[in-house]
Image 1: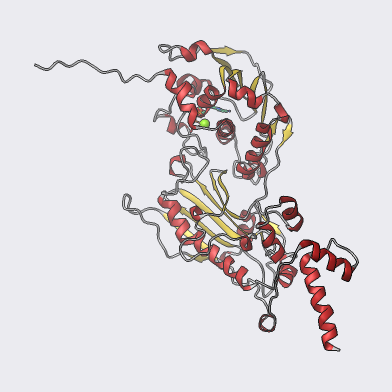
Image 2: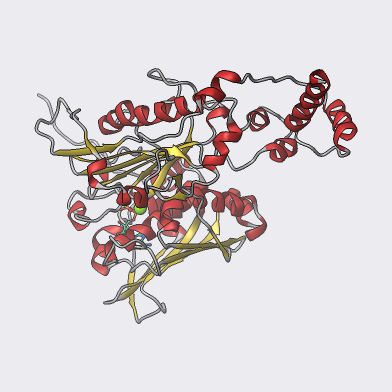
Length: 490
Ligand SMILES: Nc1ncnc2c1ncn2[C@@H]1O[C@H](COP(=O)(O)OP(=O)(O)OP(=O)(O)O)[C@@H](O)[C@H]1O
Ligand SMILES: [Mg+2]
């Protein structure tokens, strides 16, 4: 005779408080809190489609050995959400309905709690919406108590000046306290600012303001060169692709954000001495490569690896000669689960069908146009710069909006998935046809000379011929050649 009893499958607090927090870095945990602020804007904002949808919204982060605090004016947590869901460890399915028609990124129902557990042993969450205000205390006793799975929620009078959320974390864990201690002088301060600058570049450029220990973060640029569209036979333009596939909106742009590099700049990229490399570098290389954005968050910044197609499918591997090429792909969907983002939300899900489709067809196609352009102009950078330097940069959406409808072409290739038939999709692309070419006679009659010499000797020759040492090596080479050429012609 068999007897049926039961086996406990109850979760332990220890798992959430001590274990789950190990898989995430402190910086990513803080960015999870910032993601919640931005989701708050998506939930509360009207007119989210305007050019500056985040204008007027802000988040402020501050920390020291005393604790960590993040506050925002992003609408607050509605009290019914707080009672039913916000403090639960995991998202119940019915919550997905709450975020229907919103371009939010919250998916798993763990970010806020994990960030609190990661940082400290005591926290208070205060929130105020148009309707109500409350505060929830998460104490160290609660974190240790295996039986208590509810938290006291205290309804308060209007405790904040704004409609927003304030999370204060105290009793920092020893490792975290160490990282927070120096406040705005800490490595954490600059690391967080760096990450926000890149990962929130799109959101910051759309009006959101983030301050870290009083410092206002400025966005890293995400702009491409676009030549004047009026009646010129040639112009530097990006390749563009736009689609809506299975409710995911896709906007892709790839092109140049700066002039093609000179040989010296290419050499500078391989120089170990940083000061010397910076001296030779003409502009920044930050944005070179692919940047991927999901629901306004940058999930991959300036990638130059196989992940984004470099070195695969007939494309060259990334090399400093391609430093001027940048691509931006933006995926937007009201259902965050359809986005090609991994579970940390700080990386791409490289096996996502929609991502693979976009990468192998359109990212690759666009990249090929600009790597082959770069190769064509090799050795003629001066002429290329005359065009490129006079071509302004603009954000990709504005470029796309200004290209006349008739210059876009339909895309024939269809996205297909074995799991789902009849996927709704619309697609179009803009292929640049007016990219400048080096003049034939220039190309045929010129050869490139390059050689390496000891720096001391180059300076000596520069001083001898030009009366100064601080001259670009290529200039010294040219002057040497012209000097001898003059003699030879006599
Ligand atoms: N700053 C905030 N402003 C408005 N609502 C917030 C804020 N922080 C948290 N919330 C609410 O609390 C809920 C829980 O946040 P949490 O980060 O734990 O999970 P999530 O965002 O739903 O999912 P994920 O784990 O993927 O981040 C959010 O869905 C949101 O409703
Ligand atoms: Mg979240």
